[in-house]
Image 1 (tube, one colour):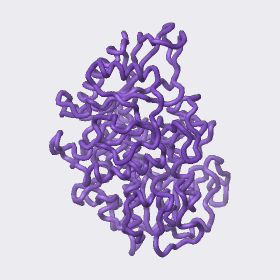
Image 2: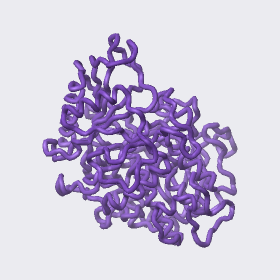
Image 3: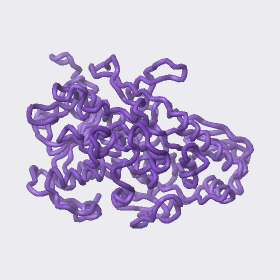
Image 4: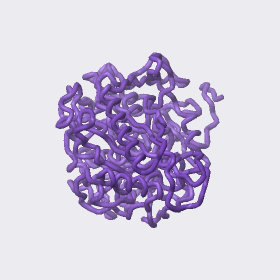
Length: 563
């Protein structure tokens, strides 16, 4: 123990503690979180020549780090349990590590549908506004930019529920698996239009990264060859090469202000030693995830903001959405080819076939259905000799409710930081929507030849990898937390850039949309706060990059090649 009563040894996963120079520096931007949103923001800002500090609670992931290791070390949140009691068993993280959940995700990268930006035309008005402050067309160039950086593999024009793209996918689709082919064939017999699942998995060498060799499961694993487009290898590492600084192992406690600024510093605590640090910056971007970002703002209460930063109208944390999901596993399907076997384990890409024909469906509760897509096994399943199994996931949106919220609990953790409560109960219509899609999913598997179909829970009730809606963007401060560009209505120099911004979660996996929104937030911040010349995002992410006037730091080049 040191003289101040804290541990002096440090955990190698986190790297060295910040130096005195690190905390004396006033950065142009401090980004909270290094996952899908935070890494994307840091990528653009650092390439523009700004001095950027990225603060991350988790540690670095190595090839030996398992998904279970990360989950075991992550903090839990208080949630309602199925028996009606409260338990500290919720998941307020996708994963807590450098790169966030993208390091372990399967790389499924759907775009949201146009109806997701204006669901009120189907569902009607609700207690919380569901309409985004801008539409699909506004986000389309940001989708295209993120897909280009990652190297998304897909087939343009194949998805029947999405508008035409402004550019083709960077890479051809991942080859369809035998299981995906069976699912697609069955979908066609039902009159649906299956298509290759868009994946952030390289099908060929791309910008210095090796293509997929399919020798390990994608889901819940790190990629051994870097073919999976996670936030570390596509965004964070290039940001660090451009001069950004990463500080891992630091829990963001609160944003602190002064008489001139709503936020002048981010107060943190080092996870392994308990030491306290503050990072000063001109602008702050909160991108921890929809649960962590809301909790940080609520913990940032001051006399000027007694209910928390951005919370003048008691909206921070409200509208929490998890997205409902469940897996269906079909047995008895006999493969047309392949060797006899008694065990099935998915290697390589997690999904190669998807169906969105039921996304808007008059027969579904409220007129909205969801998505069905192949999800290959991430564990070993036993099957009868020469049989295969087919596994799909049904995903549906949950309608935002003001009573579903993130709030602070009565207790504290080992560092004195207030516990998180995720107060959530699914709307009956959401539950009915999931049942409807599971029924259609079973119909699909039986059409493929499965004789037995069983359900496999996803655990969405306790939190999930899909977190949305707690710092909703909009034009009216009385009904939203941020403006359309992600800046808090009542804090001039604080932005939100993660899934918390989404007024409606949609049914598809949100990572691509979160990254596109984060890129848009960073773009607007550059123009509005740092005088960047107005330019389309395609120009900013080109190899020529962008130069921000009056650079404050000469420690790194203002323009770097796309990486």
